[in-house]
Image (cartoon, rainbow, N blue to C red):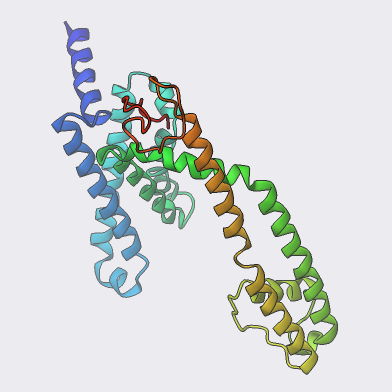
Length: 276
């Protein structure tokens, strides 16, 4: 009798905690996300000096309340999971564990509780609640595009690195330690900051020749800054074209359909849903 009751309890908890279609599951997930967001807000407030000075006991109480709450939730997930070890090793299982460990590690390692910001990763569960999983196909498309373009991007960044070394070496020879260019690596750092148009201003060329080289580096930066975008855009267009050719009509067997097309544009037959 006790085993039957235990199994019934585990089943009900599993439907609430791991399910999202039932009203109880949706309510649980919404409450969980609110708790995660508030706990992260508490952590951020702890970094504000005047708030800590006036409200530290309240913040500590809130932090430990959420930690104990998430610990109980994690243990309950292990208890009611259909495949416990699979959950523990899964992405969400690891994130759930990492979201509570820092509070306990803080007893042995000062400042470890700052790692509680990992809790924000748990908000990824919102994909289930808002039923955003259908957008995973678009995410997979972008991922495939980046993988296909990786060699071109590698060649591009290698070229930028070579240019940075050349400009950095020139600036080290022209400006030297007297003007802040104390070494070639530091000069290369200045070149990368200049080419990427960030311009921190912590190192500034003083000589006329150095300023000429600096201007050349800036113009080079503006010339090449759009190259990665062009590479990804071209690869993305090709991958989208390949995606269209992967969708075949079950009626006329023709391809070339858009990802959001519901019917064949040639014969009107209903199309199968695109695979993510």
